[in-house]
Length: 198
Image (cartoon, rainbow, N blue to C red; front, side, top):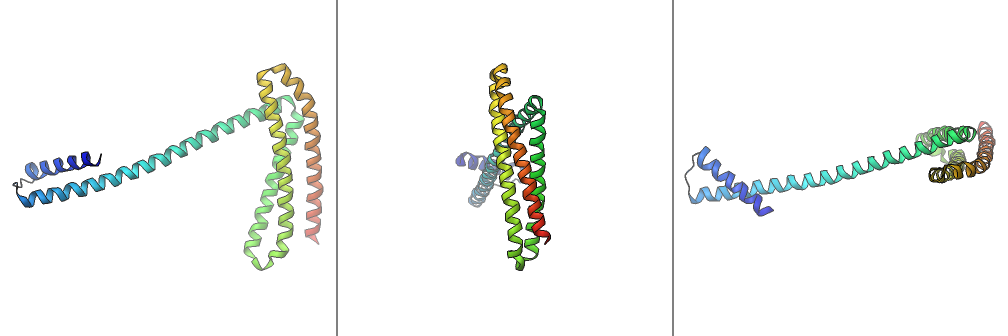
């Protein structure tokens, strides 16, 4: 490929020197022409290398966007299925998501405080760990519920009657689990806030 690029630049230089600049053929002209072709080839090669890298990176980003979009569509379908089949569990699931977001906000604020006052790290570390633990626990429950619902959704899609029957039993268990997680979160939150108020 490099040889072809070199020949193209050499021919372009030759046409430029003879027809545009009207330079007569000589040994010096040939040397200048060779240098012109080498510089042109080098620049072109660098441009092609840059383009290949850019294109590969762009392609990876496009594939990531497509994968993320598919994952979001899949998640929306599962959440819509949950809302349709068991609105009460869907509501609890959404409450857990809201609670996780609220905890994330508190964790961020405490982390910012820790950065502002690094000399108070010991005092800040305890509530930060408590909120992170609570977030982890709620996130585990949320993922567990989602995975069960996703599995049931697939079964439901394969056989609507089988899925509906199985989900009615499973959804009661998941609803109980979601209620317990929210109650535990409220109790833990109250304890953390009470300890921090003192």
